[in-house]
Length: 366
Image (cartoon, rainbow, N blue to C red):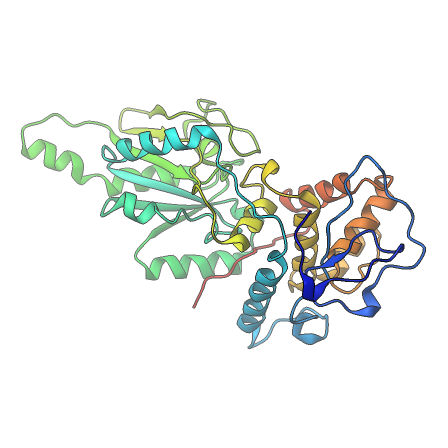
């Protein structure tokens, strides 16, 4: 990667497989002098990610809860911004999205209620910046999917946050079907006045129309399939599977519109972009897997619910302070014959499968 951070540049050294530091380097975290050679088939990492403006969780490296927990999250967010500055800009906008976005805005005019699906681990990062303007005063149900991947405390915090904004929120698990029946009932209830108005005009009642919208791979199609109890919409654990709008019927009372994931043409918030990459809500070709895995490791070591112990127990490898790059290299050398890409992909895959426990990457703002 050609990006340079002149003020943070490390001197070239045969013991270092990389030349730049995204964060403040500490001599104690430097790799050992005799570093085994990495596989020539895998790209060497471009950056060493070594902590941020706050080298440890509360400056001690020990995860803990307390009255200042909110300040800790703010510190972590600040460090995330610091870590991402030197990375390649993450942008992903497949050709079908522009066409779909235009069609979706037309279809939204026909909707009685809109169901917006977000990733429960990153509800803010999976919020389209134009969604509010598209919906206007139309009734909305917010579904936070993958509820099984965050703690009850996090679910309660987000429920309180959105309820105060007057937004109906449902937690769901599209894979197992939890929350889907409640979603169907709520959609019909919110749009019940549609047929009341039609009867007043002497018109026959019709099915309630609900549009399912959201970012790629947040689970829109899986929710519909579970709701219908049959596979009506293509679904797979990767972004970009659904590529066209499709109407499906749920009995005689509800019609659902499945839509492809809609993402901004340009993602200005690169911290959000990295979170999308970590959670697999954006195409893999848009980011460097090794860089994203290194940032994930640093986040996990700083989160009270994870910490260095969980990483060490899973991979049987010591975590050097909060240095993500060094840990990814160690995993590559010990488990994948030096293949950095495979090691990074394993770490990201383990996170996406919930192998590190309940891990939310965002907290409600105050």
